[in-house]
Amino acid sequence: MSLPHAILTALLEKPSSGLDLTRRFDKSIGYFWSATHQQIYRELGKLEAEGHIRALPAAQPARGQKKAYEVLPAGRAELARWTAASQDPKPHRDALLLRLRAAAVVGTAGLEDDLRRHRELHRSQLAEYEEIEKRDFPPGDDSAQARLHHLVLRAGIELETFWIQWLGEALENLPLGGDTSQGR
Image (cartoon, rainbow, N blue to C red; front, side, top):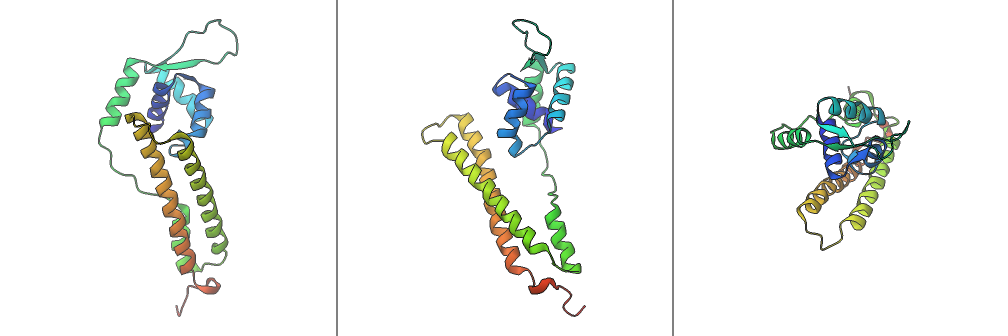
């Protein structure tokens, strides 16, 4: 249910075309709520049919022209309702964690390289987040919107930091030679 709310949020921040939205998802919202271009376009159609958004009138109607959308009062009300609603945390699903659990019974052969690869991917993502933080959150902008945006980015930074540290610990705890049987 959150993709429509992510789209409403993005459109309230700035009315946009579907293409502009997909680009913004690729650069910001997509870091914590990913969606394919097809999913975004499909949701735009649903949100428009539900009366939550509307296509802005084009200055000169032309075939193939991008439609820009804005949020209507019903869409703003839905986003406010959703924001205020209580929601339980979702269970974390991660194939790597499941693979480690399986490795405890079948052995860790081949897992070390992938753990190192994952750690490098998290280091790269952390560096990207830190660069965004330097670029987009200079000292002095203390608006509520900037503080909340920065808080979301800080969550990403902290998660990447956690994964880097945890993967280091996982690598330290892998049995030598990939054997976990130890007398079984």
